[in-house]
Amino acid sequence: MLTDSFNRKIDYLRLSVTDRCNLRCAYCMPSGGIRLIERKEMLSFEEILKAAGILSEMGIRKIRITGGEPLVREGIIDLIKQIKKIENITDISITTNGILLNKYLDELHKIPVRSINISLDTLDRQKYKKITRGGEINRVLDAISNSINIGIESVKVNVVITSLLDEEDIKGFAAMTLDKPVHIRFIEMMQPAGNDGIPEAVECSIIGGIDSLEFNDLRPGNPGHGLNPVDTIFSVMKKIGEYHAVNDKMGNGPALYYKFKQSRGSIGFIINDKNLCSYCNRIRLTPYGTVKLCLFSDKEYDIKKKMRDNRCAADIKAEIAEFVKAKPQNREESCRYVNKEKASINFQLKDFMNRIGG
Ligand code: SAM
Image (tube, rainbow, N blue to C red; front, side):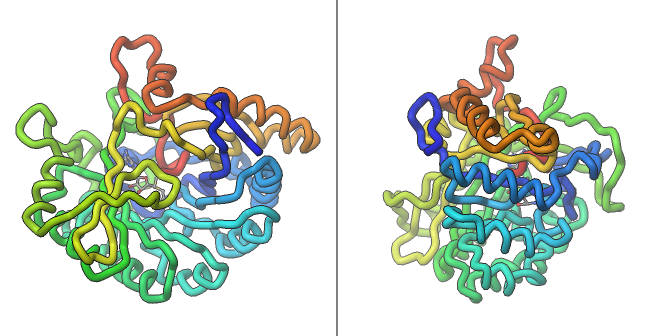
């Protein structure tokens, strides 16, 4: 069993299979693009399987495939099938923007992938195009319906709270939970890596056209003035009807969930609270082959190098067991470490989300 120094059992791996993405969400990537990982630096499928195998022998039981956009990596379905065959892996799930999901849904369902998280930050076609810099919302809406209809056990919609999220969106998302077994999760935006939250723009690899928005344009209004965005969502929910907190634990994540009377789905919140993550059970594997302890930590264990140097699995396991002891207790501790020279705590990501995987 893999445990950290706070005696938390680590049994969940977020596996980011690529940094490539077919969208360019403005809060995730700058319009100028970012430096992509060189192919030779990316883990091959064999290396991913070997790393996942080693980690499963150490206690990892659940794996969520993410990216970049995982479905753009060629051969992804075969990779997921192989991961499913690893002894001890009991649960496999995926986080996707949904653009290619309709194409792969049947196969994912057959594997079976138990849970699919789909990212969608608005229900308005034009706003979606703006936020994602070119995405077609209908493909995502179809993917959500089809995932529910085909019988995926858990379908969640990740909604990052941007300045473009309005009452219509909130009502629409809430309405989805009334008659569909879908879980909407409103996520407070995290500041991306880089100076002042604006990641370094180095390589242009952009879908043409709509590229005017940047992270700061999507940052919701100053919470010090009037209602903060989360309060606004609650106030809209109040207008819709009575709701109550859901007590049973849903998944491993940090979300708190609420339900309207008789609704089939639920509404969750993932907010940038300093204590958030104190019961975290996950580690991450990046597409460039490092194990990470937290989204906000820059500590990495280079498992790719060890594997390419032909180090034996026993040595790697011993080093990972030691490395995991450095997992920060919570988000505050992680950010304090990252920003140790600063007096205030700044919930800023240490790497680009398209690399670490959200
Ligand atoms: N491409 C897939 C997708 O869109 O779901 C998987 C990778 S994406 C990085 C995973 C999640 O991270 C998405 O739900 C996305 O909205 C979220 N995300 C990206 N940047 C974020 C930020 N700055 N703050 C909060 N969530 C973010």
